[in-house]
Length: 71
Picture 1: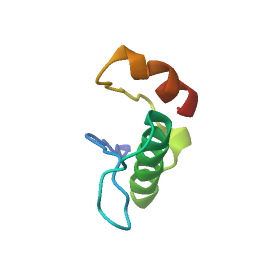
Picture 2: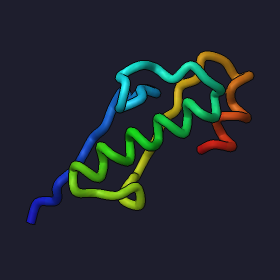
Picture 3: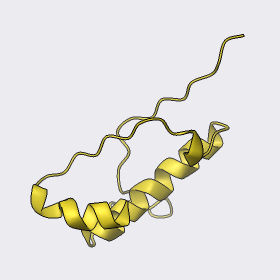
């Protein structure tokens, strides 16, 4: 039996209501990104517990602590 795989790439910190990028703290932007990813994963029939790997790209290491705490 072949297993299904969902691959997700390039998720941004878009507000799903307005369609605008979040203009806030790194932590708030990280929260929005993970809410967006969760919604997409759920729509694909999976949950965050099914996640195997996540890559995070930052514009600078000065953002790491805030992103990591939100993550």
